[in-house]
Length: 101
Image (cartoon, rainbow, N blue to C red; front, top):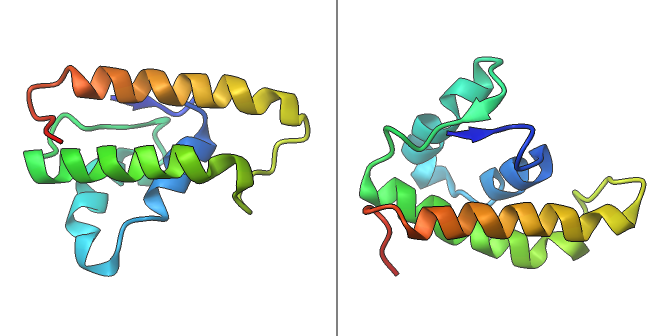
């Protein structure tokens, strides 16, 4: 489970924006709780394919985030904090048995 407070919402939404139309099954599995007005997304029920797809998109979004149009943070000094949280999410995902490169 990834709480919407940590990592911050920009990570969650930036990652979601990278999923293609044909990958919406994974989006539904991962973002269902958030879309149902909860404060988190969950990878608990994500199969290996969706889990690794989310990881790849999350990593891509992290790399693109500082220059993204979605960055609407008044204090740009907060960006390293967001990226640090993001890196921690990726680290935890690499420890999951579903992870593969």
